Length: 130
Image (cartoon, rainbow, N blue to C red):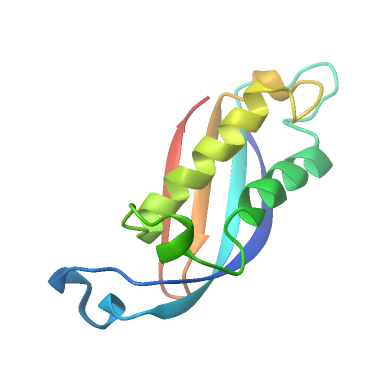
């Protein structure tokens, strides 16, 4: 399996209601380093998994909808855990891929993994087929 990974980051604020979240129930900020990893079993005639520039643009466009926002306001009916955010970003990039935003060969990307790095010690991801 071939893979190309691109990276960006977002800064958000949110709260996570529920006793299970301990102090994170209170409003707090987070800076996530976000990786999008694109997978293909075989390379096409271009000998690339995906155009890296277009992959970076797709990630940046998805993250722009969240960056510097209070998710309690931006996504008021959602419990915006790190895992849930990974799937939300996955869906945004999957839609961009289906719309042709990844350029030539982008329609051959088979899987996508979105990883949100909360710190040097903790991360979460969502991975699925496109």
